[in-house]
Image 1: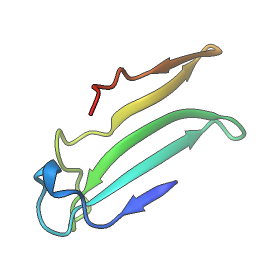
Image 2 (image 1 turned 135 degrees about the horizontal axis):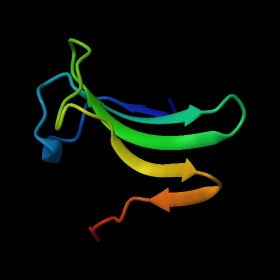
Image 3 (image 1 turned 135 degrees about the vertical axis):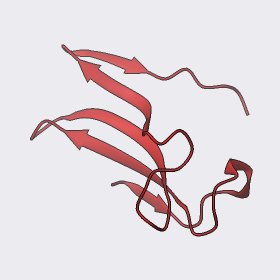
Amino acid sequence: MVRDQHPAPAAARQRPGTVSQIVIYFDGVAPIAEVHQYVRPDGSLGASGQPDPIRLVLNGRVYLQARQPR
C-alpha cells in the first residue's frame, strides 16, 4: 500500500470511518497493477465494492485509466 488516507474525502460520499487507499500489486519484482479503493471500517470495499484500476501492465504494455479534469 502506498497511500492510506484517513478519512475518505467528503466528496466521495462514503460511510464515516472509510479510508481511501492506493495499492500497488507486484509480480514478485515489478509492479503490475495500481488500484484505488475505499475501505469501510468493517473491512469491506466501498463505492462499487471493487478496486478501481489506475494502471495495469500486461505483456509489457502499460494501460492507464483515463481521468476527468478536476
